Length: 328
Image (spheres, helix red, strand yellow):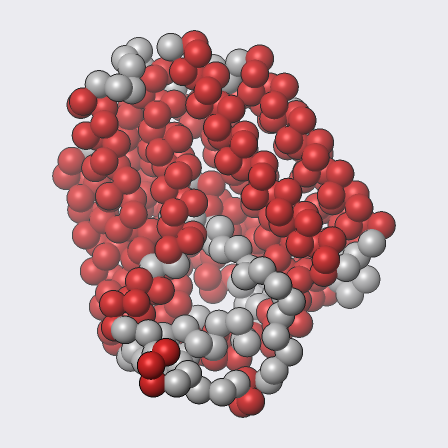
């Protein structure tokens, strides 16, 4: 999760994709077989979890600062710890259940066939129990220790990621848009942990930034791995767009939509001049790479779009935080 947290905020590994069919992949030598602990850690999709928890933290700090007290207060840091721990457990549970549901798909895709379930290092029952346990524990933790809206936001994230987005990945190319909803909810969890439903406009601005950002980000990944996704039965836009024209058009439109997003944040009360200008510049750089992809629809250029996306998100959220600190 959470898919965020996961949308799958999951970044494809660097380098060209190894073109070896599944039945020709050599088994791992005994010394290289991951430990049980490593396999359970892999179930949680740690890279996705780290990105999701970063956005949870940003949402919390912006919400706490907007509530009128400095983030250096001990109480604020304690609540932030509880928020990250609870959200992290929910994210881990969602990611594990995602892999449990997609174990057959992962077994057909070269980039995922060495995960614990398709590789046979873990039973489906173990993954199911782990996912349900972690997700349930995380939700119980949030509801017990934080304002209930944080638990509600986490529950919506968990359910929409596991029960809505995951099944849609094999049903419709619109799954990326649907999946962007749970992927954009982590900062809302953080905001709600700080101030409940109060100041919902600020939470919406954070949601909007990440929702739009995910679309070109995942389209770049989908283009690079279009053959592998097709092999697994996942329906992505490049699957029905062999020339890449529609994929490029959506990339450019969504990157362009990110340029004024800093102004939206200002209007919602969580940004200032620095973030408004900075988000516009970062969005323009992101758009430049999408335009170049439209001209040269190659895996190499898609990777440049992906890298631009990984520059945009921490940059934009960092600027919002900096603006917040300056105003506080």
